[in-house]
Amino acid sequence: MIEPDLSGQTALVTGSAKGVGRGLLLALADRGADAAVHYRTSDDAANEVADRAAKAGVQTTVVQGDVTKPEDVAGMFERVEADLGTVDVLVNNVGAFAPRHWEDIDFATWNTVLETNINGTYLCSKAALGPMREQGYGRIVNVGYASSEKGLVNTKNFPYFAAKSGVLMFTRMLAADTQNDGITVNAVSPYVVENSDEFPAEAPRGRWATTDDIAQAMLFFLDPDSSYISGQNIEVDGGWLPETV
Image (cartoon, rainbow, N blue to C red):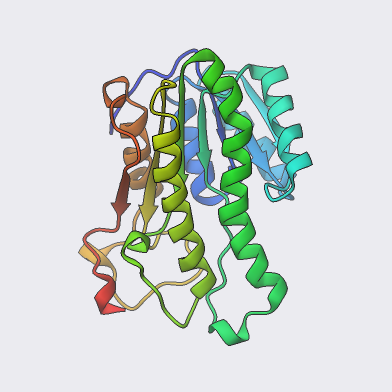
């Protein structure tokens, strides 16, 4: 796996108490980044992740908040800055999904999917950008979904597809808007991960993606030699074709 030295940097991964976010946060801590664990409701799990990250010899903090609420996001970043310093690496991982037929998705859930993916990515990126621009350095990695940039749609889970397409559009836009600021903005887009709630009948290459697979792509964007790469999306899907859905 890529081994960039992230010593002296502060990393915040949204939704890092569990699942993919947890794995990405620990991958950053293992490479020397001080780690901010974010959660909304899973406080015990978040503290366990922080304890695990601390074993890598880095500083840690735990922050709580709803990424769809501007006041919560502001509080999250204020806490991280007070405890660890300016956020150098932001991974926008939070994003609800609803694997049901679109007509069976209630309005509140529909909005939750759109808001956690689109608004959460927007609010956290906006909060991070000021200090990143001021210091002339920053790395933002957004979590998308495989084939979203190809306009993938399905009657099942539709708001998730639409939201992730928006995340990739936002990624390209923000990369252009930060090209003179020492900041890169990229995306990592998995298909199905080994801890997913649902699994299709067949897995590409005979297995589902691991957190390490996703971390490999994330760490590529954080490597010092990747400073000219921005606005890009790496699909971590084992060669899956959406036409087979």
